[in-house]
Length: 616
Figure 1: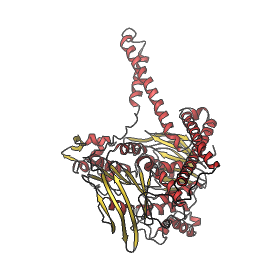
Figure 2 (figure 1 turned 180 degrees about the horizontal axis):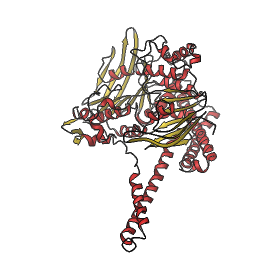
Figure 3 (figure 1 turned 120 degrees about the vertical axis):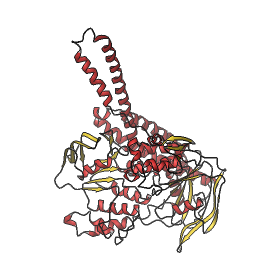
Figure 4 (figure 1 turned 180 degrees about the vertical axis):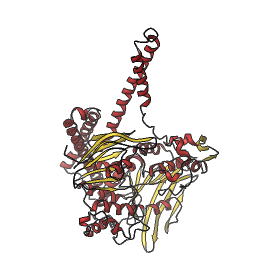
């Protein structure tokens, strides 16, 4: 390992009776690109502030190389002390380079922000982009990023991925966006129950590595329980006859019991379930050539779709493209200027808003649930048609009893989102409308939400920029951009492949500026399902047909190799036992994933070409 740019030694920090982390060491060297993960409330953001030197630990030492510069992106940037976004972004320049404001201007333009724009009234996404410009402009040695993709749209996320891929320094990033972490990191720092563990390797290996550690803990806990049982049995039988000689062994038994009691069990997972309402009609939404204009600008033009009971539909696109407008038209909250929308019968919708405007920050968590549409009066909430004690229900969403009487305003972003989920998912529904539900959720809660939505037997409409989440949850994707809305079968990745095949681009990569988007394809009709442009009839060439036949065999071999490598890397002691072998295996795993993705994309391209030629 290269000489660390920053070293933390014997670090400990706690608040009140809660210990966030205790006695760990960490070195960050050039080239380290670490994902910092852990449950909401585990102390990730606090640790990042300690690394940045913004918070002093209770114990420990922070040592950095002379001249090393770190830049910190906060989760909630505050621009109130600055008149314009340029003033704010230029504040990230080193003192000796403070007059080089053109660098800040260039970054702001690349991020689609006008440098002279005032800081008042910025949206969450605009404030985040200004903060990114401030963080990157000084060309630091270490980037410390707290949820950099929150409130960003897909073009901005893809731009940021490219910027970070070219960054030569070190990086520690907190994010729930798996696709983002897979592309920009090469290791994981896992903060769990006060312990910081490090895994060097691609992010997709983290889940298996984490499961391996938990499995080893279970083995050690079982061994300890067995030893305690044996020693307890010995104590019952042996002490009366050998009281004086065996006081040491008795004390050892007491130590074992204390050790077992002191073990911090794995925190439980959120117990999410959705209360499904009465069955809706088979047809949920039918839109015929709907459109919307505003001040001479076309927001949505001539879009048609049929959404039936049980469909899970994702809506994606740049900020300001009209996703929310389309969603409101489809759900009957906004009348279209053109075309018509027909809603199905017996619909019971539940809406989860992105801005969390349904939460009163002055209310306690208790009152937010009891005095709401799911409240049962007193200390009860109605969940799945049955009364539940409010504290018991809060525990399902990882809140403890002490938090029940705390104000909503004291919650972190992730905790506020969990509280909104508690309200939304308890209400009977057969149409669930979720606007950016993944913001600030920890990965375990996100995993469970994916499972719950996959099992939901109602209809789902979902607006999200989280590509991995969309791939796992939705059955079709509506892509909204520059007035055009097109629906594709499958998740985000499927939609992107189909969009590239039909247009030659996904529309995002056509300009380096995030604020720019590609114009719609000429002759685009906005029909419900996208179809590639027709080609002359005929057949694949001999070479193409042979390649198409061989690709499934190649993908099967790569799948088997990936599974074997992931199993090998899951060994809890592999890295300790053989660091060079571990690094070689992780490098091969990354390459195998890339080869598999390329083969899959090529197969899809050839298969679509074959079908088009056959039907031409």
